[in-house]
Length: 295
Image (cartoon, rainbow, N blue to C red; front, side, top):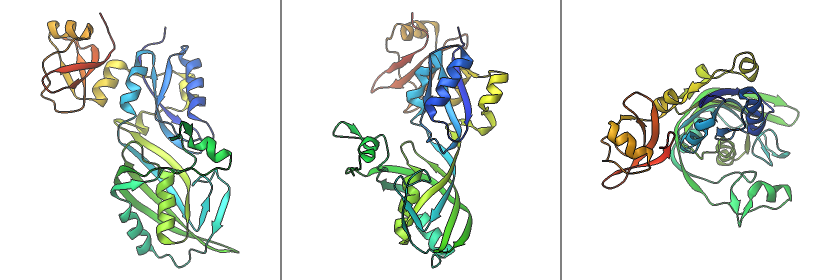
């Protein structure tokens, strides 16, 4: 049986997240593999996978902050808001100056209201938006509050062809879970009046896991390495070491005294250093939300 833990993959371009999971199942020799947060096929970079009991972590890891390196092309829209879609309206962006770009970026930084792309997995009337888009139907998607903690422009370039000028903007973006980088590209283009779409995306960090820990699928095929479950939990959450009595109560799914570590998920460890569960404070107690080692 495969060991429980987390595998940090450097996803290649043109692979779906499901493709990576399927390949990793073969490498780990287990069906119990899942991913924390989808990456589109054109995107590369950090894809966090859970193996065996590590799959129980995934729902909590999807809620963490993420960092991306992105390139936005101003002057052209697409049907998917990224380079995989069909070209839409083309507008000469030669009049868009660097300061205008930076001002548009500033307006998309902080807490913002964002409408997801038409090609997204959001459900509208019980149906995925991307399925409606494939049928040629546009659905009304509600704006949601997301947080863009960092939107730092690293380069602005211009490309000229027979129809005018594109403006390509390279940026580093750190944002909350649920933020669509494609939507940031679309909204920047709309703000500047020339349209825009995402042409490149590389995820460099998911919570505590970054590219320094990531391995390509070829590297994993040569040597399958993963972060053991104990270390994975300690890296992602505050740690509380339990007494023997508390450990047994948690293993049985019972509550214990609240933690002093504040709100949010806490890793609960037995006195011997093994992770037992994830817990969350309620008003007057702490409750296990995931038990890795039940009684």
